[in-house]
Image (tube, rainbow, N blue to C red; front, top):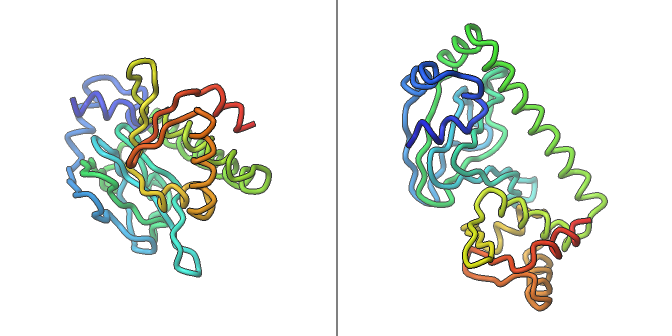
Length: 225
């Protein structure tokens, strides 16, 4: 089961079964309880991580002490890839949203794979390009999109990763608190809650504890634009 999840990560893209098993064997396992921090922003680090199960949030603290969430990641996704090319202080804090299991690849082992497997290097560069593209999108959204539009977009992105079809409805168990969801959107909790309440009143979704049930995905998609 672990190998099936690991194969979803860009690190393993293009590798044959033997190479996947060899690379997986070089990785160690870390288990985190809900709320446990894997590493803190500013702490030196040179490891790459792949999520096997659970959810991890990546956040940064501003000068006022408020945390901003940059991403919520799930099984098959990886983080810490910057350390493959530039070991140094971590740019984010990684925290388990729920009980999670992480596979860890040490920097020296990673460099060996990058040297001997050009396809791994290409996959990691593609991942970095994707992260840069997403960062540009976030900046653009903050400038050009209103809060309800950003809320709709984040819900749809969470649905793509964590949504489950059930009785014709899309159940998204994001496991985030209202404050964390607001941090992910980049707005106050009150403003985000107002947008969610409006969507619920319109019949586009139903709110549940740490989850939403999307009833009209098309309407949400229309609100993004």
